[in-house]
Amino acid sequence: MPQTKLEARKALGTTGLQVSPLCLGGNVFGWTADEATSFAVLDAFADNGGNFIDTADVYSSWVPGNRGGESETLIGKWMKSRGARERVVIATKVGSQTELGKGLGREHIQRSVEASLRRLQVDVIDLYYAHYEDLSTPVEETMAAFDALVRTGKVRALGTSNHSPRRLTESLEVSRRNNLARYAVLQPHYNLVARKDFESSLRSICEREGLVVAPYFALASGFLTGKYRKDQPPPKSARAEGVLKQYGNARGWAVIDALDAVTRRHPGANFAQVALAWLAAQPTIVAPIASATSASQTQELLGAFTLQLTEEDLRALDVASSREA
Image (cartoon, rainbow, N blue to C red):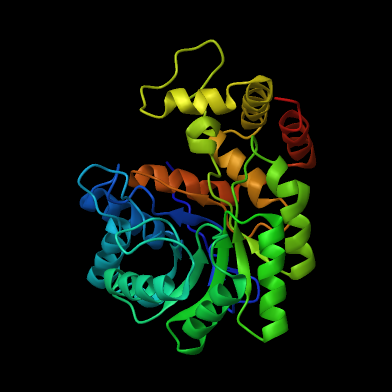
C-alpha cells in the first residue's frame, strides 16, 4: 500500500487550532483495540500527518469490565510515551453517564474535566464537547461552566454533539448575550446514508453562526466500507445485524452501487476512501471522524484525502444518497 502523508492543515473554525482533514476516532481504544493495537494506530496516524484525535470520558464503559475513561487513558499513555502532546489536537467530551454522573450541570462538568485531564495526562484539553444535550440543566448554567474552563485555561475551545437545532441555537444565543465562550465546532451524525437530520437544519445554523463540523459515524458503522453487499452474507460482526437493519434499504444499496461505480473510476481507491472524500467535500465539514483497529486501516483512511472526486462522482453519490429509504 502506498504511503499517504497528510501535509495540509485546516483551520478548526474560530478556535485558532489547525487540524488534519481526518479526525481519528478513539471510541475503539480499550474496546476492539487493546493497548498495543491502539498505540500502533496512533503511531500510524501521527507519523503520516494526522493530528486531530477524538475521544470521550465515557469510552468504553459499555465493555464488560470497563469503567469508562479507558480511551482517554490509552491516548494519554501514548502521548507521554511518544512525547507527542505538542503534535496533536485532543478532543474529548462530557455529559454521558459515567461513574461521576451525567449531564451538563456545573458541578458535573467541573469534576469531569479534572478526571479527563488526569487520564489524558495534559494541562489543557484542546476541544471540549458537550456530548449530549441536557434538558434538565439551564443552558445558562452549562455555558457559564464551560466559559469558566476556557477562562482558567483548562480548555482551549468548545464544541457540541447530539444537540437539537433548538438547543444549539439557544446555547449560541446565551453565550452571545452573556459574553461567554461559545461552541465553535459541531459533531453530528452525518454520512452518505444519514443526511437528513444534519442537512435539514443544523447545517444552516453552522453556516450562519460560523461553526465548523466534524461528523461522527462517517462510515456508517462500517456499512460504507464495502463489507456489506445486497443479497450477500453480512460480515461476521456483533453489530452487523443492527447495521443492516438501519442501512440495508433501497437508499443504502443505491449508495453502495454508486460507491462501487465511483471506486472503479479511481484505481487503487476503496469504498471507505470515496465515502470520506464525499463527506470532506460537503459545506462546513472540516474533518470527518473515523476509527481504525490497525495501522493498515489507518493508512487506508488517510488515503481519502489525496483522492480527487470529480463533479460527476459527487453528483452520482448525491443522487443515490438522496433516494427514499
